Image 1 (cartoon, rainbow, N blue to C red):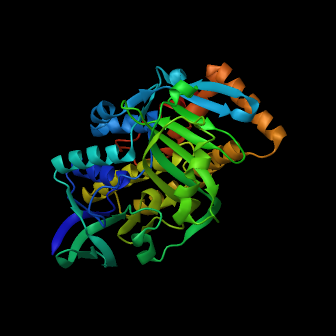
Image 2 (image 1 turned 90 degrees about the vertical axis):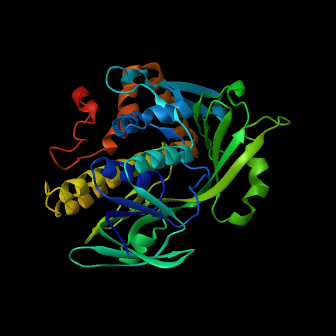
Length: 407
């Protein structure tokens, strides 16, 4: 039987970056993943200044910037009103990073896994969790592998295995909240959107044909995410794709789709993020609609703060009961910051009332025209850090906006 300090279920960005953070503190880590490879389907695409600060601390930012690209401009488009405005991150200069980095989530996964392995973390693919049991001193996972059933015993387990989390299911923890009546379809496509007046990152507001358009790399790969009614058959989404694309790409212009994936979208949070020696992070802990990129950002910080606390517990610097406070604080951040902001982003993109849409346009124009007015909006992702819960946390002073009175 394999034994380790922390067993992480799920080799996504939250699981792998958490593994890296733990391994850097000398904590033994094994990551298990049910699939036979890292997930390369279209998922997250943009990483905010708050995330970049942590990636720099973890030592992976340089690699990410080499493979991704920088951007400091966010376009807002309302085609019906012939409206286009740009909000800049330049206002963050002198406070934090004044740009975002664009890259596919699979790029983050690859870099995080490489760095975690350098520090001694193991990543095991084709290891599907089937059961777990725990006592006062350890948690034991039973996993199905191509070589047969095996067990791994750890002092602690992190469930970072997505919104359909097997770990959360095995713990019997409720995923409270709701699922939206529409779904998102995320596509990676080769097409020159900038030649059509788009910025490198864009919100497109429309009651039916809203979407997000963002450049992913320097080779011209873009992410186009649009919505459709979740009552439509998910198996035939590609048949409807050309009609949706026609509202973003002019008729007759050629494009090449590299990947496409439909997703259900949620506003949900686990009723508790700790059960004994098992904790939840990432989408296993809380899932939001992706508009504004707040889901991965929140999950990322939940994983890093949890890793910091587990490292402190292993070193005898903290009582394990601090993990109950972790559960309370991360639930607070989700319900008080993440979910309201992401819900507001979704409302704005698909707002149907003409008068409200004009009010939204006026607010965006006012923000774009006054950089200082943009500061609370572009600094919001720092609020997702929340309280790291201990004075000696490496993440204690990672919200520089407090000096600007933006608490």
